[in-house]
Image (cartoon, rainbow, N blue to C red; front, side, top):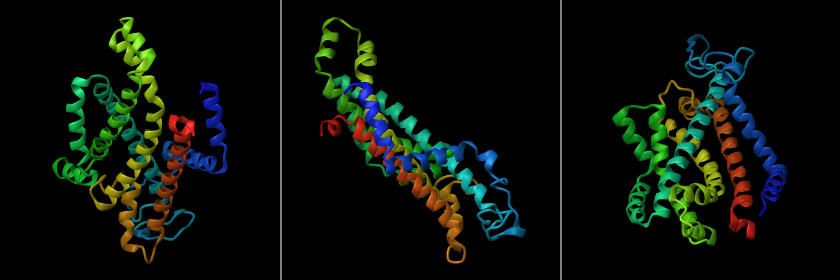
Length: 281
């Protein structure tokens, strides 16, 4: 498929009602995260016991939590935390997975060793890994990112390896080898460009998965420190008051669900347009 046709098809899919709505939600959440210091009304960690569990008002647009912290500001800054975790996990996972996957896919000498290590890593549940890391190093953003990235790397490695194994025998790659082209140039010129499309698709799923895992870990107390306003922490703080003040859980929960659904919809659109197997259909 020519690049022009590819982008035209992708644009037409993004303009469909479901994809356009999903794209709009993702853009709004990203804008919320970037503009959090500007659009928030107060400091999200400022405690005000006098206004604890306040209803919606001109001062507290979404009410306040059990510590008197403004819910609107906390939800807005929660978007910032989620975007940082999602983007950071996707970039680190794709970068490390691409590097290791190239070694495994192009050099048979490293293939068996690397893939057995990847199989071992995939056997470690991310939640248990996060709990172990928190107990050893303490809760922090870095700990959460490491706990999310490590289980995702083997999936990226397997993806890159499968792509490389399928194109290593292509005529243009064999011609480059016959002409004496250096291996680094073959990898950069012929191998890596063929991995961009599947990596972009995989990156969207890692992005969504990272946000969900971070929220789950924070809700369980094994993620970010409690004072950091992540959506998981906000829901964890509000669960004891859910029957009386359901908004403490529903506001961040609804935004989390909409964000995950929108990212997954965009991932499906990218897969349908960029995956060669779907294009053939």
